[in-house]
Length: 70
Image (cartoon, rainbow, N blue to C red; front, side):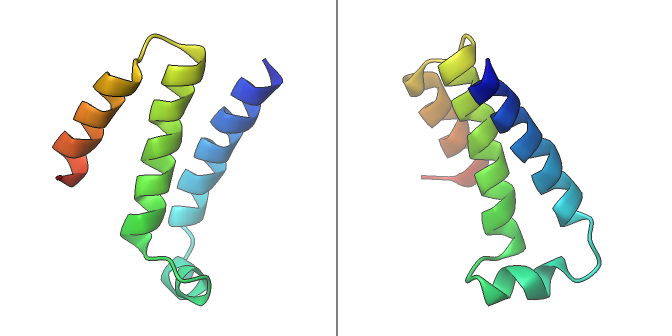
């Protein structure tokens, strides 16, 4: 249960960071773009469902391909 809470908190905090004024500059300092960061948050959502819900790895791959391409 702690793992699930950590993932959910990471998603919420990640989304909050995306609304910060200078987030692009901060992300570029760590070699990341806004789109990269958004993708990382989306992957956490899918991993959470795989680990703690009803989503299979195959279904997650299909969803990620639909959203982000091959």
